[in-house]
Image (tube, rainbow, N blue to C red; front, side, top):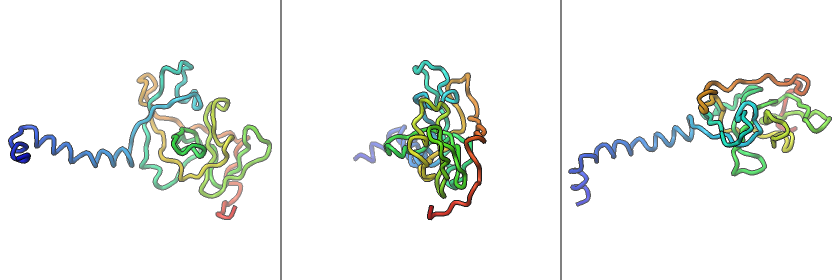
Length: 179
């Protein structure tokens, strides 16, 4: 009875065709590209440069590019917060395995072990980042932030910033898994 009514409905074929694409769309959003709204001030002036927090930037997330776990210093990424696993945070990669970094609030340099990175917000005084929780496993990084989509006046690629050579010494040692 149901299928006979469905067969007579002129929209049924269109709906069934559209529904077959739902799993493809879900896979694409989960593993390909999606967008996110940036909240807070930790990445100012890169995101939300206006101090009026009523406006929030919308950015494009590239999830495909994180599958090989190859990242560059100065790149903006999203990652699961090591402090609150329910929270997705956005930060800039400052140091990679083999580097040493001088934290903002400590005098001693921190070596970055294999499989880890040092991430920071662009606005140091409003950011909870590696200066607070230390190195983060690279496996927590879920996407690279590649474009600002909104507002239209700022549409364009998210640029990598050079790291501060006074704070980061690159490839100082060969990291191992026993460190």
